[in-house]
Length: 113
Length: 115
Image 1 (tube, rainbow over the protein chains, first blue to last red):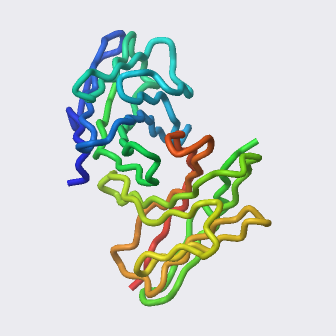
Image 2: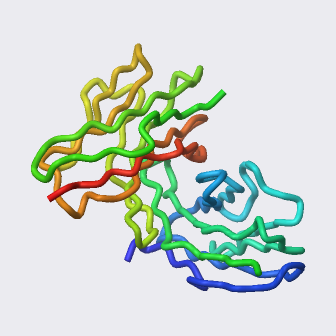
Image 3: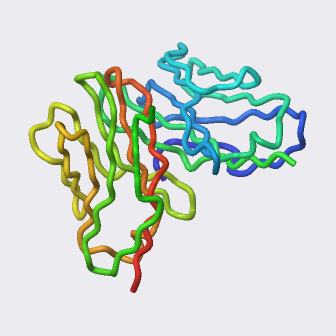
């Protein structure tokens, strides 16, 4: 157990639907990062939150949004889902103060049918 | 331009032998960090080793060492005494822009260890 908890582990949904992926960071970590891993695009950075505030944005589609709550857990919302959104979605966390560790959760495997 | 390049899509190594996985990077930021992660078939991302741009010595973690050649912008992972359990995807990643920056990943190398 890495200390980063992602739920659910698997999700199967239909095109056009909306889903929410949840991430609880390691205790004490203030930064949360979301990544998408697909066969054709590899591991792509989506978005980062630090202590509740959006810190950086990567290749995140407008149909996707995220937030980090006061208890530091984060949610990634994916809407109007398309077949191409099928991927493994990872959440990672890192501690305050710049220590080098990025701990990944076990991922949520999303399948859009 | 790619920031992280892993030129070996797949590699084979005999059990108990050493193997080097290549990684080159591109950045103009003087402060950066380099990481290697292992992803077994089960899918989780396992942190292996880290090298900071100002670190004078090559990083080592057990059987893993990072051959850091700053002038050549390379950060190759060396795995000594390969084990069957080392069969996995290996990703090189770079962090720019300070300690809370996001990671940029290479496309990975699939390592297969032969008995």
